[in-house]
Amino acid sequence: MKVTARFLLVLLVAVLSTSCFTQPDCVVTASMEIKIDFKQNKLNSRSNTRSVVDTFLRFQSIKISIAGKDSLFSLDTIPRSSLTLPIDPNQSTMKYTFVRRGRQASSPLVTESITFNYSNETRIISAQCGAFVYFLNLNVTESSYGSQFKVLNDRLLKNTTNVQILF
Image 1: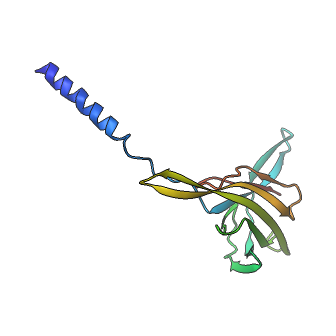
Image 2: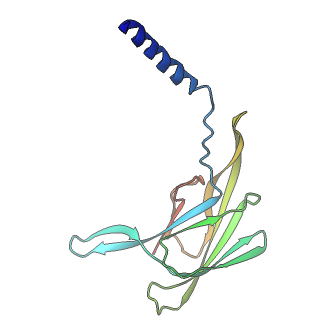
Image 3: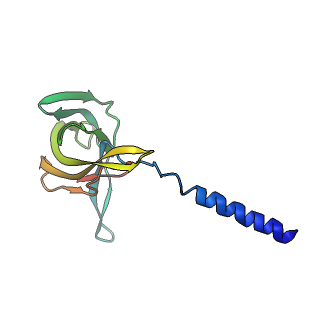
């Protein structure tokens, strides 16, 4: 009886585990957003070492330029250490213009911009899941930040930081 019960248990586990692999994995990690983190180089005076930490900026507005058309978004001026911005899937270039306060509340307004270029690739995951568009080869073509930025991930994926801007 014990041998039969064990055999049935092993058979049940084998059937269940192999049936899981017959269906495709339809998890899509593609995103249509660029995530930008704002960081600051801090010098520790005691150890004389530098570290990169989040810096919080107060944005007044963001202008998104797509194919000669502009959209302006006003923000609530809550300090932010990152922004997640949409892209246009029908274009290969996006320009973002940020209007923000300096780090002090009484600082004058500062206008900065950054332009991204990217390409897309359609992947068919399976017949059941269908096709999905992935955006990749993200690079900065123009920036008012000079060389104070770094592309961390050139693929637009969910929960991934793409660009880091240093202040």
